[in-house]
Amino acid sequence: MQRVICILFIFLSISGCMKMQWDSASTKNTKAAYEDFLRQYPNSEFTSEAKLKIETINFKEAEKENTLESYEKFIKCYPSSQFVGQAKSNIESISFQQAKEVHTTDAYEKFIGHFPNSKYLNEAQSKLENLLFQKAKDQNTIEFYEKFIDRFPNSVLKNEAQQNLEILYYTHFDKAKKTNTVSAFEDFLGKHPKSKYCADAVMIAEQLYYQKAVDEKTIIASENYLKKYPDGKYKKEVKNILIPLLRPNHTTEFTNSFNKLFENYFTNLSPTEMVHGIKGILNQYEYADKAIRDLSVAYLNPFQELAQIEKELSKSEKVEFKTILKDIAFAWIGGWNSIISAWSRLTGKDTTKTKIEKINNKFLELKEKSNQVAHYLAEKYNIELHVGNWDVQGIINK
Image 1: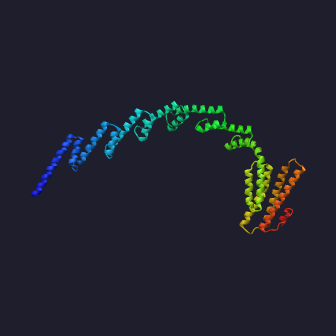
Image 2: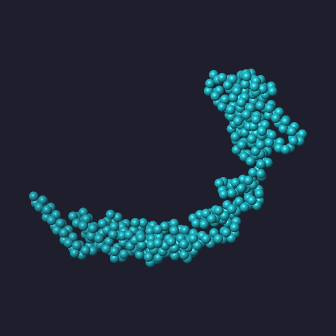
Image 3: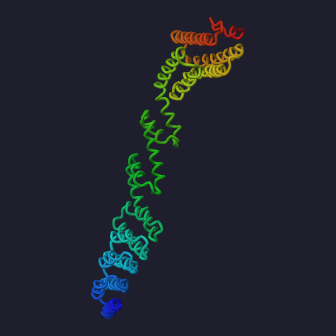
């Protein structure tokens, strides 16, 4: 019992002493007093309050110093403090004040970057806007005005910036007009695609391309225009220049390609493949002599019929061959009529013996190749055909 009383006495003595120390620290109300109390009584009932007192004193000291460094130090020491919000707000105010004192585009750019949601954002952007506009006026270049308008599309200064920009655009456009070359206008279009003078620049550049084609009358100049302006205003006129220039080469290449295609037919190609081949040649050499092109079309028509027949035969073995052969015959008759007409036009008024002999030889060559087609069909479909003299009626009767 005596021991319990002794312990209770000691506890009361300590508690009384701690209360006295706390009252003393509270009376002094200094950071040193509270820190001294915490060193002596780190786990007392007054510990939390003592720490809050120290935190409050530190924040007041940061406010008294009122610098970025003092607030940043406080936030680092007390990241969860009730004063962090106010500390950050003060940092924002100080930063904006510093930006205003420096008053440069970099200073405002930096502030806006660090505080994108700042209460001073509108004011900072307004000051930045004015500085950049003044810089554009001082530099007086297209680049600066375009950047200003792109960045501040709703600025009250936009109209003035646009007016100054159009003056500069016209200066450059007028320079291109005085130079009056394709490269000058293309340079203008490349550098100033937003200018209202672009449409005029495109029109003049096209006229210069066209004039070059007219003056030079060369394949390169004409093809340059057509590549640049495939649907251009002068497309028809340039083609009329180009066609006579390309016709000799196209005619030669057309003929060579056509002959090579026909040679391959009897060894490698089906009627369907021949149709694709002839169409390809027609598309590739569109400027070849019309009579030569008509000749290829004369071949194309019967081959299209043969291709259709081959397609039908591939579907069923029960096909009436008599009907097929009639279709083949009529197709070839139509084709031969076209061939004769085409080659007749080729002769023109030249009825010299040499020319006629050449044409007759060509007819014989075509006739022989047609007979080869008939034999090909006979072998392919196992049918006897009378084609010794290209006996069309014989084929039909068979």
